[in-house]
Length: 264
Image (cartoon, rainbow, N blue to C red; front, side):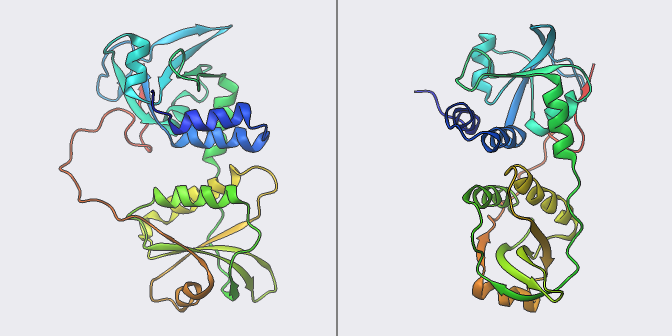
Protein backbone atom coordinates (compact mmCIF):
# COMPACT_ATOMS: atom_id res chain seq x y z
CA UNK A 1 0.00 0.00 0.00
CA UNK A 2 1.41 3.41 -1.00
CA UNK A 3 2.46 5.68 1.84
CA UNK A 4 0.10 8.53 2.66
CA UNK A 5 2.00 11.79 2.80
CA UNK A 6 1.08 14.96 4.72
CA UNK A 7 0.05 16.52 1.39
CA UNK A 8 -2.26 13.57 0.69
CA UNK A 9 -3.93 14.00 4.08
CA UNK A 10 -4.26 17.78 3.72
CA UNK A 11 -5.66 17.44 0.20
CA UNK A 12 -8.19 14.83 1.28
CA UNK A 13 -9.35 17.05 4.14
CA UNK A 14 -9.65 19.97 1.73
CA UNK A 15 -11.79 18.12 -0.82
CA UNK A 16 -13.80 15.91 1.53
CA UNK A 17 -13.83 17.66 4.89
CA UNK A 18 -16.14 20.49 3.90
CA UNK A 19 -14.20 22.90 6.13
CA UNK A 20 -14.03 25.74 3.59
CA UNK A 21 -11.30 28.33 3.81
CA UNK A 22 -9.64 26.76 6.85
CA UNK A 23 -9.08 23.48 4.98
CA UNK A 24 -7.72 25.27 1.91
CA UNK A 25 -5.32 27.30 4.02
CA UNK A 26 -4.27 24.09 5.76
CA UNK A 27 -3.41 22.57 2.40
CA UNK A 28 -1.35 25.61 1.39
CA UNK A 29 0.46 25.54 4.73
CA UNK A 30 1.34 21.88 4.21
CA UNK A 31 2.49 22.62 0.66
CA UNK A 32 4.75 25.45 1.85
CA UNK A 33 6.47 23.19 4.40
CA UNK A 34 6.62 20.01 2.29
CA UNK A 35 9.81 18.81 0.61
CA UNK A 36 9.18 18.72 -3.15
CA UNK A 37 11.07 17.20 -6.07
CA UNK A 38 10.92 19.26 -9.26
CA UNK A 39 11.24 17.49 -12.61
CA UNK A 40 13.94 19.06 -14.80
CA UNK A 41 14.77 19.03 -18.50
CA UNK A 42 18.43 18.38 -17.74
CA UNK A 43 20.80 18.05 -14.81
CA UNK A 44 21.35 21.28 -12.82
CA UNK A 45 24.31 23.46 -13.78
CA UNK A 46 25.48 25.12 -10.58
CA UNK A 47 22.52 27.08 -9.18
CA UNK A 48 20.75 27.20 -12.55
CA UNK A 49 17.96 24.75 -13.36
CA UNK A 50 15.66 24.20 -16.33
CA UNK A 51 12.29 22.82 -15.14
CA UNK A 52 10.41 20.52 -17.47
CA UNK A 53 7.28 22.34 -18.63
CA UNK A 54 3.94 20.82 -19.55
CA UNK A 55 0.85 22.33 -21.12
CA UNK A 56 -2.22 22.68 -18.88
CA UNK A 57 -5.20 24.48 -20.34
CA UNK A 58 -4.04 27.82 -21.72
CA UNK A 59 -0.75 27.92 -19.85
CA UNK A 60 2.34 26.03 -18.82
CA UNK A 61 3.11 24.30 -15.54
CA UNK A 62 6.12 22.79 -13.85
CA UNK A 63 5.86 19.26 -12.46
CA UNK A 64 6.64 18.59 -8.80
CA UNK A 65 6.12 15.64 -6.48
CA UNK A 66 6.30 15.15 -2.73
CA UNK A 67 8.63 12.14 -2.96
CA UNK A 68 11.39 10.93 -5.25
CA UNK A 69 9.44 7.72 -5.77
CA UNK A 70 6.44 9.60 -7.10
CA UNK A 71 8.60 11.59 -9.50
CA UNK A 72 10.21 8.38 -10.74
CA UNK A 73 6.79 6.78 -11.17
CA UNK A 74 5.62 9.70 -13.30
CA UNK A 75 8.86 9.81 -15.34
CA UNK A 76 8.93 6.00 -15.59
CA UNK A 77 12.48 5.88 -14.33
CA UNK A 78 15.34 8.04 -13.16
CA UNK A 79 15.04 11.65 -14.31
CA UNK A 80 16.88 14.92 -13.61
CA UNK A 81 15.40 16.65 -10.59
CA UNK A 82 15.94 19.27 -7.90
CA UNK A 83 14.70 18.95 -4.33
CA UNK A 84 13.50 21.99 -2.40
CA UNK A 85 10.91 23.06 0.19
CA UNK A 86 7.54 24.00 -1.25
CA UNK A 87 7.96 27.62 -0.19
CA UNK A 88 11.20 27.87 -2.20
CA UNK A 89 9.51 26.52 -5.32
CA UNK A 90 6.62 28.96 -4.87
CA UNK A 91 9.10 31.82 -4.47
CA UNK A 92 10.98 30.70 -7.58
CA UNK A 93 7.81 30.66 -9.71
CA UNK A 94 6.44 34.01 -8.51
CA UNK A 95 5.78 36.37 -11.39
CA UNK A 96 6.80 33.83 -14.02
CA UNK A 97 3.28 33.17 -15.30
CA UNK A 98 3.85 29.45 -14.78
CA UNK A 99 1.61 27.16 -12.74
CA UNK A 100 2.38 24.13 -10.60
CA UNK A 101 1.22 20.58 -11.29
CA UNK A 102 1.58 18.63 -8.05
CA UNK A 103 1.68 14.81 -7.91
CA UNK A 104 -0.03 14.56 -11.30
CA UNK A 105 -0.99 11.02 -12.21
CA UNK A 106 0.65 9.37 -9.21
CA UNK A 107 -1.36 10.29 -6.09
CA UNK A 108 -4.81 11.23 -4.88
CA UNK A 109 -3.39 14.66 -3.98
CA UNK A 110 -2.80 15.61 -7.62
CA UNK A 111 -3.49 19.32 -7.95
CA UNK A 112 -3.10 22.08 -10.53
CA UNK A 113 -2.25 25.48 -9.04
CA UNK A 114 -2.47 28.39 -11.53
CA UNK A 115 0.08 31.24 -11.52
CA UNK A 116 -2.25 33.64 -9.69
CA UNK A 117 -2.57 31.23 -6.76
CA UNK A 118 1.22 30.85 -6.57
CA UNK A 119 1.66 34.64 -6.63
CA UNK A 120 -0.88 35.00 -3.81
CA UNK A 121 0.79 32.27 -1.75
CA UNK A 122 4.24 33.83 -2.22
CA UNK A 123 2.93 37.17 -0.99
CA UNK A 124 1.17 35.48 1.93
CA UNK A 125 4.37 33.71 2.97
CA UNK A 126 6.44 36.86 2.62
CA UNK A 127 4.39 38.92 5.09
CA UNK A 128 6.68 40.22 7.80
CA UNK A 129 6.06 39.04 11.39
CA UNK A 130 4.79 41.49 13.97
CA UNK A 131 7.35 43.49 15.91
CA UNK A 132 8.59 41.85 19.08
CA UNK A 133 6.56 42.47 22.18
CA UNK A 134 7.69 45.40 24.33
CA UNK A 135 5.16 45.27 27.19
CA UNK A 136 5.84 43.01 30.16
CA UNK A 137 3.13 40.59 31.29
CA UNK A 138 1.26 41.64 34.43
CA UNK A 139 -0.77 38.42 34.85
CA UNK A 140 -0.26 34.96 33.34
CA UNK A 141 -2.68 32.04 33.27
CA UNK A 142 -3.35 28.81 31.41
CA UNK A 143 -4.45 29.37 27.79
CA UNK A 144 -8.20 29.27 27.35
CA UNK A 145 -10.47 28.74 24.36
CA UNK A 146 -7.82 28.56 21.64
CA UNK A 147 -8.78 26.58 18.49
CA UNK A 148 -7.27 23.11 18.20
CA UNK A 149 -6.16 23.97 14.66
CA UNK A 150 -3.96 26.73 16.05
CA UNK A 151 -2.48 24.51 18.76
CA UNK A 152 -1.63 21.83 16.18
CA UNK A 153 -0.07 24.40 13.85
CA UNK A 154 2.06 25.87 16.63
CA UNK A 155 3.17 22.41 17.76
CA UNK A 156 4.17 21.42 14.21
CA UNK A 157 6.16 24.58 13.59
CA UNK A 158 7.88 24.49 16.97
CA UNK A 159 8.86 20.87 16.31
CA UNK A 160 10.68 22.07 13.19
CA UNK A 161 12.57 24.68 15.25
CA UNK A 162 14.62 22.04 17.06
CA UNK A 163 17.97 23.37 18.24
CA UNK A 164 16.94 27.02 17.84
CA UNK A 165 15.47 27.45 21.34
CA UNK A 166 15.02 25.54 24.59
CA UNK A 167 11.22 25.48 24.83
CA UNK A 168 8.09 27.57 24.37
CA UNK A 169 5.16 28.46 26.62
CA UNK A 170 1.63 29.43 25.61
CA UNK A 171 -0.36 31.42 28.17
CA UNK A 172 -3.26 33.79 28.59
CA UNK A 173 -1.88 37.20 29.48
CA UNK A 174 -2.86 40.59 30.86
CA UNK A 175 -0.49 43.50 30.39
CA UNK A 176 0.02 46.53 32.60
CA UNK A 177 -2.10 48.68 30.26
CA UNK A 178 -5.05 46.32 30.78
CA UNK A 179 -4.84 44.63 27.37
CA UNK A 180 -5.57 40.90 27.40
CA UNK A 181 -4.67 38.20 24.92
CA UNK A 182 -2.42 35.18 24.50
CA UNK A 183 1.35 35.06 24.64
CA UNK A 184 3.69 32.56 23.02
CA UNK A 185 6.95 32.87 24.94
CA UNK A 186 10.07 31.41 23.32
CA UNK A 187 12.73 30.65 25.90
CA UNK A 188 16.46 30.39 25.21
CA UNK A 189 16.30 31.19 21.49
CA UNK A 190 19.47 31.90 19.56
CA UNK A 191 19.37 35.65 18.75
CA UNK A 192 19.97 35.05 15.06
CA UNK A 193 16.97 32.67 14.94
CA UNK A 194 14.41 34.99 16.55
CA UNK A 195 13.09 36.50 13.31
CA UNK A 196 12.67 33.11 11.66
CA UNK A 197 10.84 31.71 14.69
CA UNK A 198 8.57 34.76 14.93
CA UNK A 199 7.76 34.45 11.23
CA UNK A 200 6.89 30.77 11.54
CA UNK A 201 4.57 31.45 14.47
CA UNK A 202 2.89 34.32 12.58
CA UNK A 203 2.33 31.92 9.67
CA UNK A 204 0.61 29.45 11.99
CA UNK A 205 -1.93 32.12 12.93
CA UNK A 206 -2.44 33.40 9.37
CA UNK A 207 -2.91 29.91 7.94
CA UNK A 208 -5.57 29.29 10.56
CA UNK A 209 -7.93 31.54 8.60
CA UNK A 210 -10.42 34.14 9.77
CA UNK A 211 -11.38 34.21 13.41
CA UNK A 212 -7.97 33.16 14.73
CA UNK A 213 -7.09 35.03 17.93
CA UNK A 214 -4.15 37.41 17.99
CA UNK A 215 -1.01 35.89 19.41
CA UNK A 216 1.91 37.87 20.82
CA UNK A 217 5.34 36.30 20.38
CA UNK A 218 8.11 37.25 22.77
CA UNK A 219 11.57 35.93 23.59
CA UNK A 220 12.98 35.39 27.08
CA UNK A 221 16.27 34.19 28.51
CA UNK A 222 16.09 30.95 30.53
CA UNK A 223 16.86 32.87 33.75
CA UNK A 224 14.21 35.57 33.14
CA UNK A 225 11.67 35.65 36.02
CA UNK A 226 8.86 35.53 33.45
CA UNK A 227 10.06 32.07 32.35
CA UNK A 228 9.70 30.78 35.92
CA UNK A 229 6.17 32.20 36.13
CA UNK A 230 5.21 30.61 32.82
CA UNK A 231 6.46 27.20 33.95
CA UNK A 232 3.79 27.20 36.67
CA UNK A 233 0.72 28.01 34.57
CA UNK A 234 1.37 27.85 30.82
CA UNK A 235 1.13 25.12 28.21
CA UNK A 236 4.71 24.02 27.53
CA UNK A 237 6.16 22.93 24.17
CA UNK A 238 9.51 21.14 24.29
CA UNK A 239 11.59 21.62 21.16
CA UNK A 240 13.52 18.59 19.89
CA UNK A 241 17.29 18.58 20.20
CA UNK A 242 19.27 18.46 16.99
CA UNK A 243 21.18 15.33 16.12
CA UNK A 244 24.95 15.56 15.83
CA UNK A 245 25.95 17.43 12.73
CA UNK A 246 27.12 15.44 9.72
CA UNK A 247 30.10 16.49 7.60
CA UNK A 248 29.05 19.19 5.12
CA UNK A 249 28.30 18.19 1.55
CA UNK A 250 27.80 20.30 -1.56
CA UNK A 251 24.41 22.05 -1.46
CA UNK A 252 21.90 21.05 -4.13
CA UNK A 253 19.94 23.75 -5.98
CA UNK A 254 16.94 24.72 -3.87
CA UNK A 255 18.28 23.40 -0.57
CA UNK A 256 18.79 26.89 0.86
CA UNK A 257 15.44 28.72 1.40
CA UNK A 258 17.28 32.06 1.30
CA UNK A 259 18.88 31.28 -2.06
CA UNK A 260 16.31 29.85 -4.47
CA UNK A 261 17.53 28.25 -7.70
CA UNK A 262 17.83 30.36 -10.83
CA UNK A 263 15.51 29.56 -13.72
CA UNK A 264 17.19 29.28 -17.11
